[in-house]
Length: 441
Ligand code: SAJ
Image 1 (cartoon, rainbow, N blue to C red):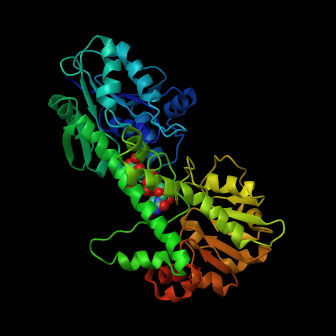
Image 2: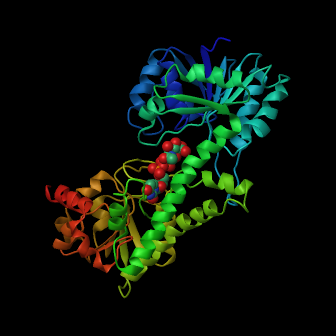
Image 3: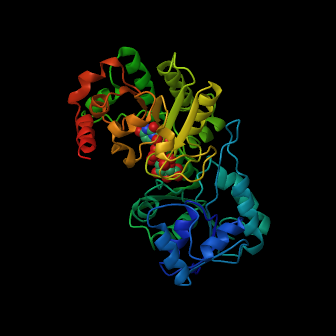
């Protein structure tokens, strides 16, 4: 089988960088997206998502003639499916895009072709969902065409770098399928490649994100306990993590994005009775935005017509991605509680609520609510910001701000996961470092 021509279905956060990397490694790549605007942008060498290094990569791929985009699938040697696998409101995997992509491949599928599913999927998707769709072509998986699952594992903000350097797990419908997929990835992956079956690869990917989700839930539970104890969860975690076999994650206003808050449900859906810790982790993390709203309400108790300056609405720091961000339920919760707000984010352009400048957001505000730990926020100068505000109050949900500095500038300082005795934690290494960075400005 030749594998010089690759057709990638879905030009999103994974498909576009993968298509560009393949194109700049000598492959003829056809990128397919159902959105004509995305196709037009890519064909001009442009990008519709922000990722460090991506624009240069796409430009190089298009300029070299290696990457073209279209709305229709063309015959190819390899088909890579990199489409979304969202969760429905009742927490079930929505595999519509995977099925649709499979249907698009059927008319052009030829004997000896390789089909790879990259999208994160519930266990059994390759074997029980995608395989029968592709077999509508009249070819059988195995003898007719090869089928493999190679789940993406890259973290937004470092996508291009991690696509090249991370290890990959490839599951094949049979050994030949896994080996064929491995040959393709070896052309651009610097990390190790491990071969297995499709269901093991599916479950491995889901457990990576589930591990992180459950551990974040543990950190969030610690935060709530420490608030009741009047001590700092951040200090507890920092000290406990000095133990060589402990890695407590970071508390926060909730788990966002399109992966970690979604993937554990794919396991719970299949095994609701057995996946108990996994389901509970999801519930704890999904409860954090409401908890933050209640904290704001308590802090502003007695203030008439309270107004909050929300800083940072992307689902985590230093990215522009606000999909499934915990900031949304927090802001909706503020609205329901009758608390008015203005929002500032230096990265996010596309958001459900109107955005303001930093100055507009702070003018007349009674409280700063920090939800995303963008680097920019670590260097805010509280003395000047305080002059714009009606009250000098801040609630930092990410441990991004220096307690000492903001207190010195007359702020009433609250930190998620930290009780009133937080002053005792001033010897904490992380807090000292952050204070030093802020006062250097
Ligand atoms: N978060 C916390 N506390 C932490 C870590 C994260 O509250 O200690 C929050 C973040 O603020 C964010 C959410 O969790 O709202 C998820 O962020 P993340 O950085 O943990 O992960 P993602 O969703 O950006 O990317 C994850 C990665 N998975 C793992 O690290 C195991 C990435 O490698 C996957 O490829 C990606 O999901 C995916 O596409 O599945």
